[in-house]
Amino acid sequence: MKRNSKLLALMLSGTLVAGPLAYGVLPALADQTSPAATNQKSADAVAKTTSSSNDTELLTTVDDAYTAMREVRAARLALFDGNTDMATQMTNDAIAKMQSAETSEAKWGVPSKSGPQGVTYVPFDSSIMLGEGFTVTPDNSKAVSAANDQMAKGDAKGAAETLKASNIDVSVAAAMVPAKLSLTHLQDAAKLIKSGKYYEANLALKGVEDGVVIDQWGLAQLPRQAGQATKSSATTAAPQTAATKSNG
Image (cartoon, rainbow, N blue to C red; front, top):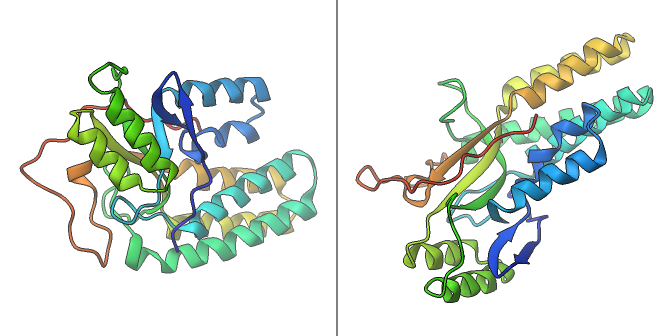
């Protein structure tokens, strides 16, 4: 069920960096942000993040939840363009994917630090994060190079451990969605589109996106995903890292 990484690691001035959380820039699209502005937001985020990860030793993300969120975005754009048939199709596709994601809560669901308590969230996108003040120095350049090589080979956990061993602050950030609540919004949107209430349907779809939270943890404080042994450590402090923000 975990999503295969869709982001490529980049080399920027010798620093281990890569694309931001794939979801991070999506909400701006249906709110009529220009392509140039969207690209600038992405570029700004690139300087603060490392490669997207699906390493099960870090945090497992759910492919169906990721796809559902992409379909929600497509449905909103279709409504904006007046293509109601496409909006109907994308909304129905999102419903099917979110139903599947909801069944994954029992295995991969986690609580959120920033969202409402008692709600189960499904991670659908994740990234390894570097500390806010990180710069490449002669002392850490070898570790950065080694971590880049590990990321290129898909070894996110190894890269994180390499950086941590060189006293480079590392954490994991994840975009997460409450599947059950999102499914309700999607089903409402489908009914509203069918009734010709397109403005209201767009608001229902926006409700799905508004429910997304982005949490960040130190490597020793990764949340326990249902069905897995706990990874948290009450005695280890989380490293200080740059705050992660949603653009939607």
